[in-house]
Length: 225
Image 1: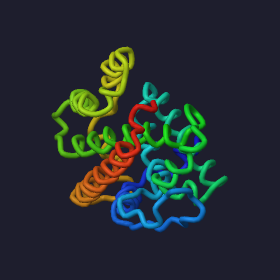
Image 2 (image 1 turned 90 degrees about the vertical axis):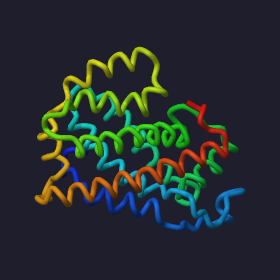
Image 3 (image 1 turned 180 degrees about the vertical axis):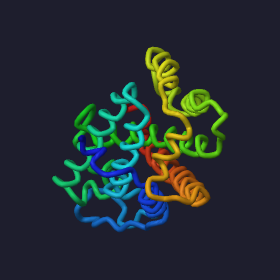
């Protein structure tokens, strides 16, 4: 059993930590991170973001074997961010701190925390939209169609033709909506509570996605990968 499936997916944890990400005001030790503002009210705390993605990685894994390459890629980026934070806790305390820490080093590719965050943030937009749409649907609705529509409105704009074509096939291997909801519920038995928790994930997830987008716009980082 892999690390991602060792414990069941917990939607409560995702909702709680996503809310924390969108509401916390973060203090960075200014002396430790060159040119980084000390108080960053529209920032995102890195380890909490990683914790959320530890859970979301389990959700991606549930989507089936054809999505294993996505799960593997996300896991690699999570592990990289944890390693970078361990080596430089203040420099990788938040997304803004990360950007300021890496700029002088000109990190790129697989060594870059900024590239990892960029890819994870793009995927976050798709994941929260798909979760919400799947829960809002009925068992008679087509999950492949819902997934494809969410993908086309989010990740597709960042992917080359060959990946977009592969996704068209991959969506038909997805589990049923009923099976997906059972997985999302976990130990939560009240479906109305699931909807509340998903709403929290989506609403706060959109704030987190927007914050990171804004940081990358300000620092002109959208085209680094």
